[in-house]
Image: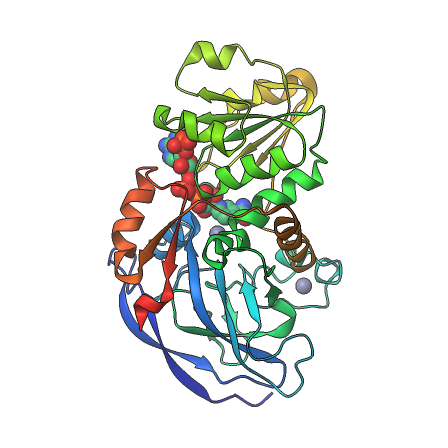
Amino acid sequence: MSKPTCYSTKAYSAASATSPLGAAVIERRTPTETDVQIQILYCGVCHSDLHFARNEWHFTQYPAVPGHEIVGKVTSVGSGVKKFKVGDTVGVGCLVDSCRTCPSCLSGLEQFCDLGMTGGTYGGTEKHLGTPTLGGYSQSIVVTEDFVLRMPANLNLAAAAPLLCAGITTYSPLRRAKVGPGHKVGIVGLGGLGHMAVKFAKAFGAQVVLFTTSSSKVADGKRLGAHEVVVSTDESQMAAHAGTFDFILDAVSATHDINAYLNLLKRDGHLVLVGAPEKPIPVGAFALLMRRRSLSGSLIGGLPETQEMLDFCGKHDITSDIEMIQMDQINTAYERMLKSDVKYRFVIDMASLA
Ligand code: NAP
Ligand code: ZN
Ligand code: ZN
């Protein structure tokens, strides 16, 4: 494979784990035969962007460009592209490539590729250039057509951007657990992921209980679809739910006491962790042994399920509750995210980068 040529595009990047993000010019490959070039209109701000920019997961290479909740318009396509044409409204999530030959990739579970997440939208490897992949805090991106998604025409594009990560990351484990009518489901943490989880669990017909540390979010939790909201710092409110949940989804970004939630599960109840805090979370053996409970994790979703989720959101008119920001407000947005002060997803208006 010969190296394609590159073009320059504006972006926002971090130079080190401790430096704020700032304006930069980056190089992207010019579209090859199977590539789609996208003008980015909006990009959601995931807590993973912050973990990554600050090297909290210990694999960041600098300069780093975060952003994996990308929506935009197709501005050019390679000669071999079959699924997209110039002017289409498209999305790109956490993946821009994978090996495409291992059993996981062949099953549409590209996020579990045997080679690892080499095709991450950021923090992966740009296969054509051999450089680190650079994310969506940028004016444009080039992605092979198989990793580009169709956006439902009826959805507000800015509010749909967070579906590309917060949406699929919560949709996938709820679907896998077949959450539905008759299930008592807990969602822990009302942030970007948590608020999408509440919306999906409600849409799937479950009885939804939200757990939040922020008493200021109780009314919003109910408005978003929770039947009940528990302030998790109140021990008596927590005790009232002991041993009653079929399923709990934990979407907390920091270390916390997960045993308190395991203890709320019924016999054979299941807790899925999607939050990815920097530090390990201690698990008490008896929280699992008693009532044969189980704990597992879940990572975003593959391409087919991401398209399924987008189509479901189009059909049921589900989007994210967003706060639009300009690109140069990103550092303040990160500080607010750390204080759990976002309702409920920041989305960058990429026109502000021009
Ligand atoms: P977010 O918007 O910042 O929300 C996190 C929420 O967690 C906060 O709103 C807060 O909810 C709660 N929280 C924060 N600090 C806490 C603490 N010390 N103790 C208890 N609760 C606390 O973050 P996000 O974008 O939803 O992401 C959440 C986590 O999921 C991050 O770690 C992110 O990296 C990870 N993630 C994982 C995947 C995956 O594939 N598994 C995908 C995307 C993101 P309350 O105010 O309601 O308590
Ligand atoms: Zn994310
Ligand atoms: Zn693979």
